[in-house]
Image 1 (cartoon, helix red, strand yellow):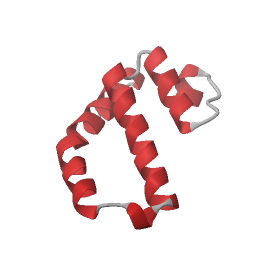
Image 2: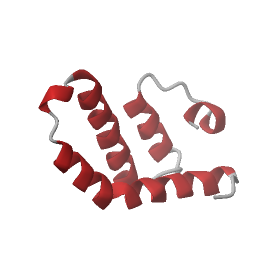
Image 3: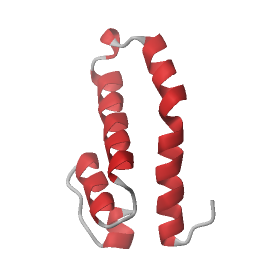
Length: 82
C-alpha cells in the first residue's frame, strides 16, 4: 500500500506502517498495533521457544478488532470494498 498508493519505498515493515500513518491511511493507534504484530511475528519466527501460547491467543482475541479497523480504513482510502 505504501508503494502503490503513497509512491513510497519503505525500508522495513515498521517504516511502511509509519508511512501509512503519515499518509492518512491508518491512525497512530492502528500503526502501533500493526508494529506490535510485526514484532510478535519476529518473536514467533526467531525465538519461538520463549512464546507463551495462551498469552498469544488471548491477545489475538482481544486486539484483532484494531487490526480489522486499520484494514477497513486503508481499504476505504484506496476505494476497495470491504
